[in-house]
Image 1 (spheres, one colour):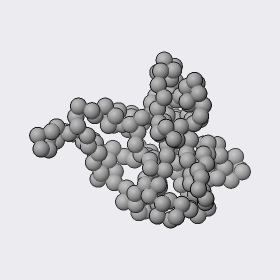
Image 2 (cartoon, one colour):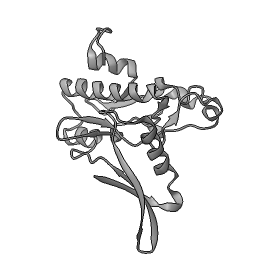
Image 3 (cartoon, helix red, strand yellow):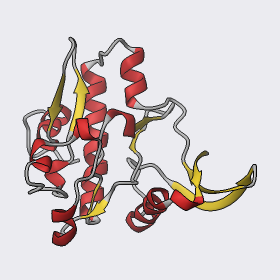
Image 4 (cartoon, one colour):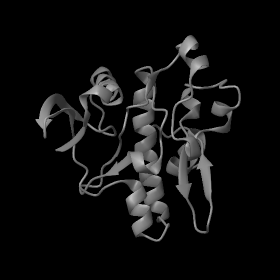
Length: 189
């Protein structure tokens, strides 16, 4: 089990993450939440979120360890799992808002799961959509920043992938589907 902790006075993001994970329920491609609680350390009250432990770390760690390269079969496997998780999340009415290599976790049994739902939002809240931008700034889709027109649209779950060389590229969910499943659009997730 992994424990995410923070001062109880600034725990809104962790509490939001728990609420989202509770509302969406179980999905094999999304990190599991086992509950929450409070503890006191050195006189400070901490809010703790108990999550499934990813023994292989993040996809960012894996890419870095492998010199910025992934095999084609790994990219396909990761893309397939990420897409299944995003499809489940979107079907439950949520958008992650922070898909990036650091938020994709790897497990010793080969599982790949989406994590860190602290910025996730329910899709379709027009007032909230116009008021704020969510996500890691360097990983935001340009259209999320330009007039914040598409803030929580599921299409804005972009995924940066390091490719050989000194640059990054972004793949949309549709491009990841092609990477994960090939050109046959009839393949089901």
